[in-house]
Length: 548
Image (cartoon, rainbow, N blue to C red; front, side, top):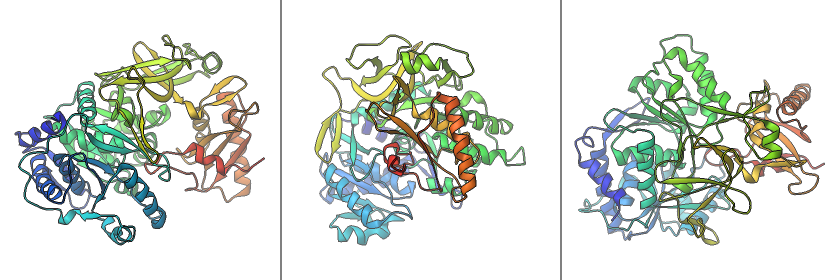
């Protein structure tokens, strides 16, 4: 039996489930639905799915924009014994023909025969018809309420989470009912989640693991109040985010670096000191990508006059392969950093404490969540000691058993249950520190250079768009390995301004890492390749560097 589904059903039936729930439709038409109401809607939809032939273990894809429609739909799939896949959503710039082809690849890879389609993407029904993709419209998914959830084992897939890579070469993380349950419980303990007093506020996309698991599944499972808007709502008006926290007295939120940087700039430009009240916030989690201390400091500084307490910042480490969370910093301690000698880190593979002006600063990401272990090993698999840099690996009940790929299933764990995270890092005083992705490390003269150091130096130059700089390896693996920097700027069409930007970026990068870029490319906004969840794709950006 699935503890995950049992708990979700029990939450809906409890007194809390009949009061707490999710608020959607802000800022124009806010509507509150209790978790009990979401569950009753899900029971009817699950009845329709079972009547339609959805069998235990079946893969069902969901494509919709409104969180109010998505929540009962995904719960319905779980009640029917199936697994959910949130499809990447097309944007106004998306070529629908290419999107449809990529979607067909994903559906074939996960073995799905059904797409649950909702507004505004129900307009894509003719595209699915052309491709022979079977679908049901969410607005018409209504049947006899399912009496009892379909029984499935803990090892049955609950969520097939698409990774953030290219949709042309898709991969899905196979998250089981047991994985989901374990990680949710680990995060509940580490974040001290309190259904009676917490209220979560989020705009994160539901096709990303942070949005889907952290800010839909977990509150629905545990019965925590949730205020949910869409990424488009946030991007159209970034101050909607602090406004919602203020009006709803939000206690928990999360976002990647770029969002904290954007909202910091917008809050700094607000004249009235009483425009927001962020004093209720106890967790502002940052962990979707390598944490930028400058973005955190900007957010804290801009929010201070609105009652934001620096202690609410919670630095975290996570990945879809562990369902969501790996490590959380201690609650309400703020961002703590480890300053280490840059040369020892690059050449000696050791994190030696340093207070030098050029010291490399890494946020401390906390101990592993309950139920997980983190270990640092060298290339031969030998365990490294404290403050020794190596490959991070993790094991525990929340770790996925494998991926689904276009070439078939792929196991993720070794004989002892360890998952290679693909990240480099170290451990200090029991806390995890992540240095960077192993595949992105630039090796020059025997030194390991992390691209985030180069990128942060580049974005410190006025005129470079925040969060839109990429450092890429050139001639990787050869004796002449080099690197280039590609940035976005609104000045890209001004020849003199571009030359000035290139000079300033070169100086900043040399100051940061002691090495000069082989090439610096300045492009207009919207040029850098990104994943569907908005992360920059370093490998794809290599094609933007002119050949020497």
